[in-house]
Length: 191
Length: 124
Image (cartoon, rainbow over all chains, first blue to last red; front, top):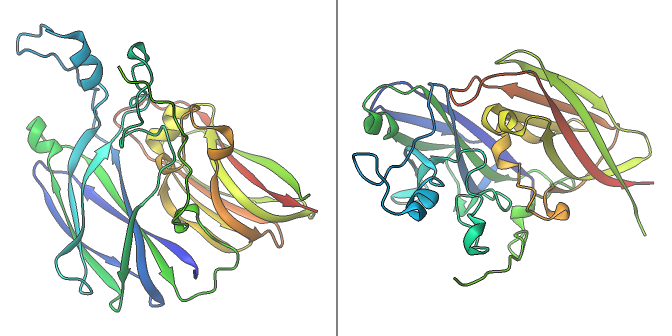
């Protein structure tokens, strides 16, 4: 495979329910898009939510709280579109995982790793989009501000991994290898 | 059997929102760089606020602005799998250009912290 490069696009969201349309410029020597990732930086003050099961604050089942507290925060939805493929080629909820969350509750034995933990290495969503055009169009729609009913200030970053026509010069990221098995082989105990 | 090296480079983040660009140099005996990771004495601040860029031997490996979140792993990930593989880059002149940006964040309170760029590779 040729040289893989990373394109970073930063989007600033400030208002409740804001819809942001943006363009990601790709290099002129691009061959294809091989992966996409997203991330968020929250600038507004935000405290980690407490999840009472009932509106009056009482909790029916302590187990529900344990699992609900491990949820990631959904900020909104991002969609990407290219002239090289019909329709939307990438669509995802942008999540923000709290530090220390995602570690499974060990009191019921070891559980399989979830998709929203950093209990394993992060990898971009694989993509094989051959490009003849040098840009990608996208949109992001806020849902966090809508849920909280006030303006939230945060940045969304879209990371696009592209293969170019340049020689690799020894650079080969691990996700380029389809057979990569970087995830730990965890012992799964059935409850 | 090849010989390996592991080298750490530290930078100090002293003010919130600071952007740091620093050059480091590897020893001349270092032939290739194969893995990297980013560590800190305050992993929560690194995780929530950090983004970085990395150039090795004037070749851009990671573009500036890439989230540290995408690199860090829990200690439950086996030690040999925590590092990010970048193939086998020629260390060349051994110049490492590391850019780190601290982004003010609503979830954490800033305190000075140290960011460590950890590199591994082969040496002569």
